[in-house]
Image 1 (tube, rainbow, N blue to C red):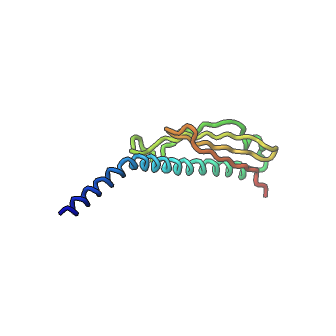
Image 2 (cartoon, one colour):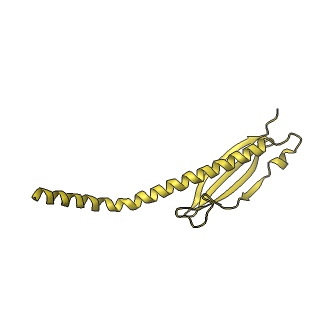
Image 3 (tube, rainbow, N blue to C red):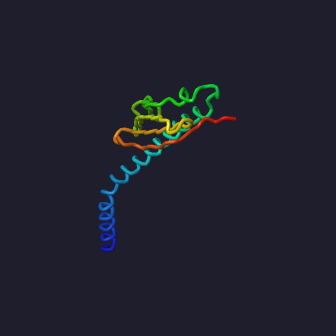
Length: 130
């Protein structure tokens, strides 16, 4: 009988001790989920820009293929549905520069609600001439 009460008491103490950790676990889980979604969007945008630059017709002037400047794409909601629990809107900013005469550097920055810094990556692409 006493052993049962001690076991119940120890179990209750363990549960109470673990409860404060749950909030940190939920925050970490949502952050990694958002970063994974943002990385997919960012990689898709980088590959799209690189494909457009590399596969442009040779007769087209390079400065019309690689347009220098900053482009803010329309916000992306991953599920495509409004009001879905856990969904967030991602903002995409693409910056294009010409580091050399025949190459184009594309920087993509993806941010989301609650993270103004977001994640960034870049790619250098040149025209594919066959």
